[in-house]
Image 1 (cartoon, one colour):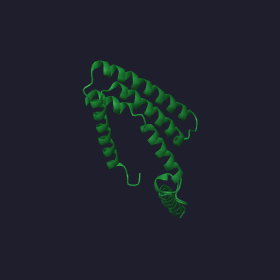
Image 2 (tube, rainbow, N blue to C red):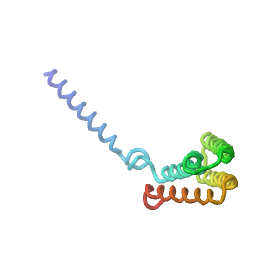
Image 3 (cartoon, rainbow, N blue to C red):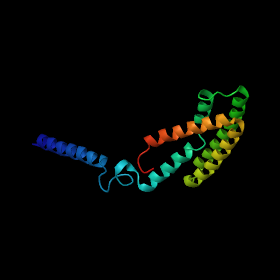
Length: 155
C-alpha cells in the first residue's frame, strides 16, 4: 500500500511540476515580463526604437562603403574622406560609450547624433565635386527607399 501511495504522490507532483512550468512560460499570472506580448512594455519598446534610430545616425560604414565602391573618387578624395569618417566614427563611439555608462536619454542623444551627422555630411560635401554630390544624394535616396520598404508601417 505504501508503494502505491508513493507512486500516486510522485505522479501528482510531476503533473503539478510540468503544468506550472508550462503556465509560467506562457506568461502565467499577469502576462509575465513587462506585460505579455514579447516581454516588453510600450516604454521599453520606445526606448529600443530611439536607441536603434540613434545608432543609425552618422552611418560611417555605409558612407565609406558607398564612396569606396560605388563612386569613382580620386585617391586624394578617398584619403580626405577617410579622415572625415574616422573623426566622425571616433566621435560617435565616444557618445555611445558615454551613453552606455549612464542611463542615457536616447531621444536627446539622437539629436546630438543628428548634429554629428550634419557636420560629417557638410565636410564630405566639401571634398566632392558637384556631380559626385549629386551621385551621393541619389545613392542616399535609394538607400532610404530600401530602408522604408523593410520598416513596419507607421514608422
